[in-house]
Image (tube, rainbow, N blue to C red; front, side, top):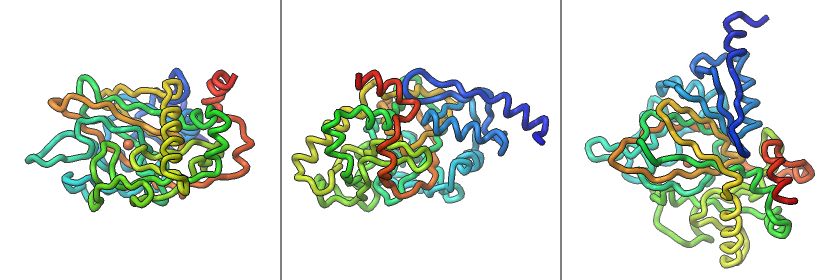
Length: 316
Ligand SMILES: [Fe+2]
């Protein structure tokens, strides 16, 4: 029996798909009041739309930690970049993405520059599954975040390219962050064969939805395992150019109180630069993921429903 309060909240939640091939806005939902009865609506919407936008949310670090735990086991925040202030040990899964400095020391990563297309922390053995990202302070212009649907990117590849990569693995370099800054303890290198990192399948089967997706980390120091470097570079240049075609992308123009949840297992993202005279502060948390794998059964499946129409149009 569902209580009146539960029913009221569950009925108030509305999933409103955004135009294009990814994203939905969730209306009528204060995530602090989410309960077990209404959460399955959100969970299903994430599988269907890959990224969810909740506007007007005001969350403390503790409340974001609780919300993040809805999507999986909280992951410890990734390696800090050099020169960034120590994290708040009370909330180890929250990292700060910010250009703000205190006593001359950055309180978070990425500054005010561009962040290149990437998948969060894909250079570890078990990369994070989902990210929750809350805007606390945003500049008046710039700093937009763009996402691309990697189900669509895979399913629209030219056949010959698809055949070349379907059984290949990709080295995900761990030297630099998405802004090109060195991770703590890393040394500058351009040696794609010997740089530190982890190898994952390029065609990855989503562990929840079961659809195949193109799985790229970041272009810098990427390497298709076992290929001559020149051939790997040529193929990767093509893949990156294809994966970020505007047909697959959606741009989030941030407002204070915007909260995004996104699926790192089927999306890449990037961020525009912004004027460093303005403050930008975001709180980010991750859920632990699983080791990426490729299931032979997934090759026979049709495209993910959110990408299906576009795939049909582009392959026509
Ligand atoms: Fe990121």
